[in-house]
Structures are given as structure tokens and as C-alpha cells.
Image (cartoon, rainbow, N blue to C red; front, top):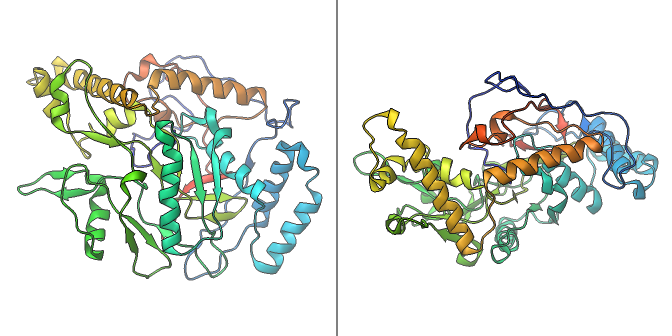
Length: 420
């Protein structure tokens, strides 16, 4: 899973448990040279100061230090590629001549997978090697980008057996910023202000829904209405919008194994969480249009999207249907309702045959990932406040430990995208 960047948590000291428990401390992995662990063994990820962010008004400059660091890491973690010398000279010469350079297909795939491995907020990094990398760098027209985004969703959906996929479109180049997808995710629900206050749908999708309406999108103002895809080819250009085809957006209707009335709520959620508003940076080259997905962990939907006060805010309604006493916080009605929402989400995805993880299993797998990385001499930076699940955190093993500190200079990485 690669978590939704909209999730918000209270900031905590880097690498520390915010509650100060006397929990066992994670061992500090070696940061020495490559181990004898085979092709996956290697040195720590490149840690260089990032170059200045690109803008429409200035040429993109690819930092040769980042480029060189990435080339060395590629060759170090892939012994079959040979020594880095010839490729390093080629890359630095290309930067001297053009201001940037072009990755080989192998470098692109390696860099995209490392960006996932380096994602400090993701609990699902055990699967980083399985990421399917689609090289679409030759595409920059809005129609082509939209068509391939929908194909991305079909490929990732895989009839419910969700595949981790990233689709990498044209990079920023000197004087030529690449097109941008304006949606936060390839699939997301619209939000509309309701008469008399409140919201219909998802407030997180309200701003994009308003912009799409201004562009001509006709919406029905329903609670679960998929937003169109908006693609902007260049700064100041009118964005193009595209309806997401039905066969590209698999949705799961939510039911509960013990409460038949739950289906009457009419809730559903989409199967593929594909983030589309982040920049993939590899060796100093920035790909601002690189949508990527993993699969959902149940709590992302049941404990956040459906429950958060600034999202669907369903706790009070569901608690009422459950017959819970909501007159006092001491009845723990919120906690009890939250558990039932998560039961419904896990049950529904399982019944529909759609991949979804639960937070207990995924916590165990994350510790397995840390152990694997330690054996290979690599640290595993992790943001405690994002790794610990929002439900029953203290019951999961990821809660009771410290992690390697988050390093904002670590590359390759998925980064918050700079505006035009």
C-alpha cells in the first residue's frame, strides 16, 4: 500500500514514538557496502541535497550529484550491470550538453521501485520489488495520458487481484515542464455542498469537482460520484477533462456480515488507490506525472475515508443504526462503531474478491521487510505516525518500537509536487 497523502496525523519527533513508551529500540542497520545477498543487496539509497524545484519560468536543472549518486547505486545493487564508470561519464556529459539526461528503461524501473522502498509513510514496502513499471515517457498529449491512465487502472485492477503499478509519463526538461494530472487520485469521489450546510459526497473531492464543473462536467451530486480525470498540458492552459470509463473503476458495495441493514446505507468504495499528484524523482530527473498504486489496507477506508469528520463523517449515523448510546464519550460509541465499519469494509472486499490487507497482518509484514533490509545493510526510514494503524494501534507490533529516522533528502522518492 502507498497511503493517501491526504491522511493527516499529529506531527511527531523524527524517528521517535510520540508517547514515550519504554519499548525495545530497533537496531541500527549497517550503512556499509553491499552484502553478499545477491542482486538485491546494496548500499543505502542516495542521500544528496535535492536540486531546486522546477518552475515554468526557469529551466529545469538536473543536479549532477544526484545523477551520479543514482548511477552508482544502480550499478552497486545490480552487479550484472557492470561497473558504473562508462555510464557515469555518459550521464554527466549529457547533463553538461543539455541540462538533463535520459534514464535507460532499466534505470527507470529500478528507480521507481526504490522510490517505493524509500517511502517512509508506507507500511506495505515488503512488496517493492513487485511494482509493475510502465514506461510511457514518450507521451505528453492530454488524450494519450488519459487513455493510459485508464489502462493503468484496468491493469492494476486485474479482476480484483490488485497489482502495484506505476505509469511514468514525460519528465520535466529544461524550459519544458511536463503535463500534470490535477486529480489527487485517478479515482476519487466528488464532493458537493449540501443545501442547509454539510456535504454530499466526499469533501476531499469538492475543489476538483467545482473546477470540473467550470470546465463543463455535468455532475449528478450523488454521494459516490467518480470525478473526471483532469489533465493540464502546460501552465496556464485550459485543462482537458475525461470521464473515467466504468470498466476502469471497479467499486465494491459495502455490506456487513452481521447487520443486514448496513447495505441500505448505500456505501461503496473504489478498489484501486492510485495517487496521481506526486512527482517521482530519480537521480535528479523529475517525473510530475507518474500515477502509482498499491492496494488498500482496510483502515484507510473504514477508519479514515468513511469516518473522519472532514470526509464522509458516518460514525454518528452508523452508531444510531447499531443502537449505541451516544450520549457520552465514556460509552466508547465511536470506538465500537469504528470497529464495525472496518469489519464491513474487510468483509465486503473479501466477498467481492478484491485484494485488501488488514492492519494486523500488514504490521507483521512490515517488520519482516525491516528485517530483510537490515540483513542487506540498508536502513528503513519510517514515519511512526503513519505506520501505526488508526485502529487498535497498540495491538500491532509496529506500535511498540522506534524506526530509522526519516530523511527528506533520500532519493529516489515520490514527492509532493511543486505548482506550475
